[in-house]
Length: 243
Length: 232
Image (cartoon, rainbow over all chains, first blue to last red; front, side, top):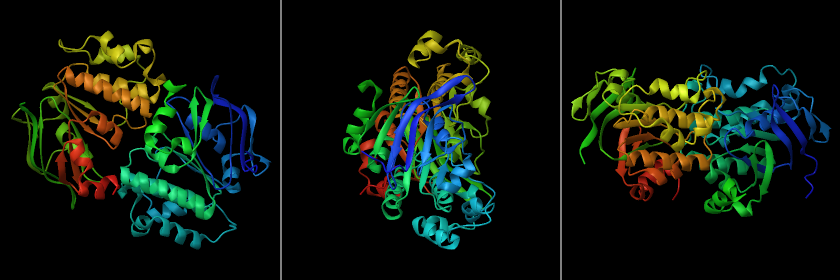
């Protein structure tokens, strides 16, 4: 199925020093699509995301975003083009307020093609708790609130796709469900695409998305949303023992 | 079963904020007790109070009927407790075997080869801890906390960042160690892990004890669903 040349990863290799981690990886994602990536620890999921974001260089292969080869672009250029990134662990600035955290990506930019005030208003509509706590320090937020803040910080820059690395980690079940619903709403209402690394099977199932299973740095299988519609089915199909 | 740990009206304040408010908890020998609750419920504060990282403002902590709330962490360890913090705290520059050998200072320790086998670390015993995957670091850390056959082990989110298969394996290891006589108190969010492993669950909310029961009682409790699970 054609993915309209939105984000296309072609046979990429990347790694650290002499070690290859991401091993001949390919996938495509369409506008507004949610795609999850799962697999055991140490299999290369985070390295893959960092490579897509430009934090680790592509050794061979290519990354195309909106028909442009961005394989050699730095993370800042990719961000300007419309790729947002929420790293594992959220990396909230604990001594800045919630609103300062959200607005941080805006400060170095001189010319903006969007209305920041309107974006902030939309973000507060999506995450009412952040509006309530807009003047509180990042350190005072719970894990679930910090995750919402990290997503909000990515949203302020109007990204067309957001890469999320383990957004459900350490978060209570009800907030995990809220985040899944929020990603689906953003995908539906704003056509924002999401590339989500996740190990929480219940979260993957709630996202109603296709899911790539990663093993030893390679894409060993892509399962469809309908195959993952129940947690039990997802658990069986995503088990490495099944392959 | 005898009581192994009891807190009575345990309270901890940070400035004007009451993080834990008159929490009473009784854990019996042989239990795998989970402490769950929304973010900010006081789980970590309770964890840090019972291991001796914080001193309570009010209330008592009894371990095998002895008052321990004034004892330091290392003094509590000597009484037969083991602790694993959320982030793995292994010695990165030492091998797996060297890490275990360092902790192996009591006569009643588990056999190291058996332990390496249980934690699937046999093939990595000469590997530097720094080179282990996150999952194996977590297992090495649990192995370090349980090696000396403590009577009571505290684990803070031991499956954080693990895949569901690694989580399942962690549950199996904990149940095996429990059968060998170790009581566990575990702070966690992963409900699949709780369902697989818990014998009893305590739910904290806003610093207070909100509900206690078996996993099925917790899952069917309306209040717990409202504040934590988010299912109707």
